[in-house]
Length: 631
Image 1 (cartoon, rainbow, N blue to C red):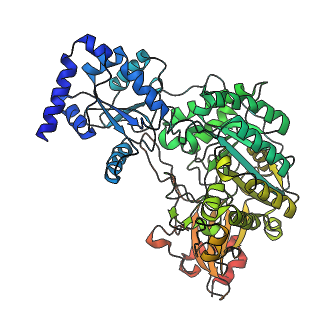
Image 2 (cartoon, rainbow, N blue to C red; image 1 turned 180 degrees about the horizontal axis):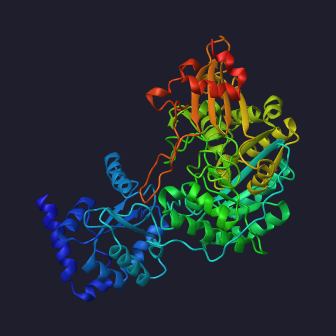
Image 3 (tube, rainbow, N blue to C red; image 1 turned 180 degrees about the vertical axis):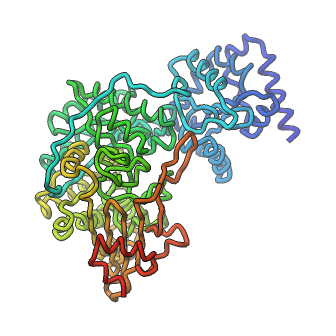
């Protein structure tokens, strides 16, 4: 430790005393490892300048190191005012080194990304800046502002420096006419197909990304995919969601890709919209920053398409109800892909507890359906749509395991990766049948499937067979199916649902019995097929019930006529609240009396009679046929 302190002190002294001529030609002086820099900051009282990234694989990181970090003005400013350090991942890192670096990165709220973190002398994050800077002068000015406006507890969420302590006021506001409401419930079978375009794998904030541009997202891939989809499902209209990086990149691939979008709008009737934060905008950004991202992203989409084009929806993964209110009241948008049903312990944010089909959210929480009428104190005029229809048996699982993924359904990554394309198609059709079979559609009035295939997946998954074969199978079995854009479907659902009072959904699924045992499956999908007995269990049956008051589910071994046990009961009349403020929170769930994930001791499936008597009565009032659950 003494030797480390001696080294860091000597290095810091060298920064202060080196002649200016030497500084002008030098790069920033990095104090490493991170712990040594943090100790130096605590001793000197100077803020930390922490560069996080990977200079081996990330072109943006390389450019930052070779250009910004060698600029005279920044080197001089840093020598006097900052302690500079790097936390750079490397292909040659040992397991222990990767673990140590990941702990530092996670402590700064930086999941697998690259950016510059400014921390106070105690090592607490007070700001975040992009490695791509318009000018060194602007970069230094932002660093100074972050330091001047810092608070002792640090700033955890990202906000542009100009947005610190400000309320976002959009330059334009928009309105939309209310629909003419139908006296009839919604009928038919519908698919929402979304494809997302991004510059980086993760773009949690404007400042950060991960890796370089995703090569497969090229105009050639987009044209091939769109034409193939039109051949497999004539008349299909899909939704394209664009990340901030993809909308702004001047890389030739993205420039040319943006030029295709007006063609797709005019030729196919597709919808273009924004994809804020690559699924988790509100986790990483302040509320005001999220509003700014939405407004400016929507304006960029309108300019990209031209001719006065305006999106009708937003693709967002998880979206705070506060952002939904903003979209409805300020941007005139009334449909959002704003929840990921059964999301839990996967991809960095949890959100289990909602309704699988669209609903209007409560002002309390994006997963809670509004309890009151349209225009009431609890009502948000936003159609909140799921992003990926999943297998109910997979949806019970937590995260990812050796032989399962809790997101298995009609999404391509999980089915192709875990089962291969041939057996993956069997699973996709199994889930499709759960929602589109005649009995379910007759009871519910309509069937609905929703999925997001990021554009970069298409070359990887071999879409020549995978996607077209699913769509052809759907059209052959269910010829009345319509594939509408997210905005179109939201408008249609809204017309038939003035509020949530018509929501009364019932589903029955038996474990997929069309999947082979492991040995046979590996012959079909060599070195790939995984078999999980809790997903492929034809003897088991799950029944789900959804309405505005609660969601309720049972599980049973129907072959043995076993007991129907309650596996989920989530009430929607409870005072749920979303995470708020400037603190990062992973759990955006609403977990009530018993939850399907079994993440708590109380969640083990139990007899209906073990529920409180008043709750039993409420369930039976909605579903009298469930009286059989009371012996």
